[in-house]
Image (cartoon, rainbow over all chains, first blue to last red; front, side):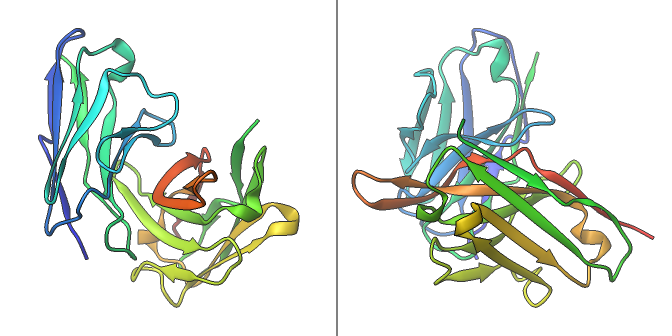
Length: 108
Length: 125
């Protein structure tokens, strides 16, 4: 089973700042990695798939990069609605699909 | 409207059973591969089970294999999860989730592009 480790666990930033979230895989997942956003009381929302492709309707301030074992989600300029928990998920080697433990992006 | 709506959650005693349903609307349900994903209170996401569009392939997480059964009825646009021998650690919000499918290329991207709002299952005496 591929283990995904996200860092940091919590990231405290202000609106307008740039956010950089990391996801590291225990073995190569090629580019088969996605990012999700989850707000309290809501279902997760797909943001990025195949490491760098934005899902339908996702604003351009969200971007993904990386391949192999190291991946990054970047939010170029934080909007108030971006403060949430973010998860990465791999689909290179499944079952099982695996998720990272999440990064909480909070307002500073 | 394209949506998934789960139902069937509730409070059940350890060892008990529950059947979750997920009603799909606004898209061609029979074309899509589907999953159940759960989230324990205050915790992260855990994939539970997968079923292919024509029920040819079914997979389970080790934590539920032998106790849970996934199924679907394409005529009713519905996905199901039969949960038996429930344990306290099965307490979670259960989401149904659709696999991202590129119809123009007839290609599945193995990520979850549509989620329901979830249904809460609480296993407690």
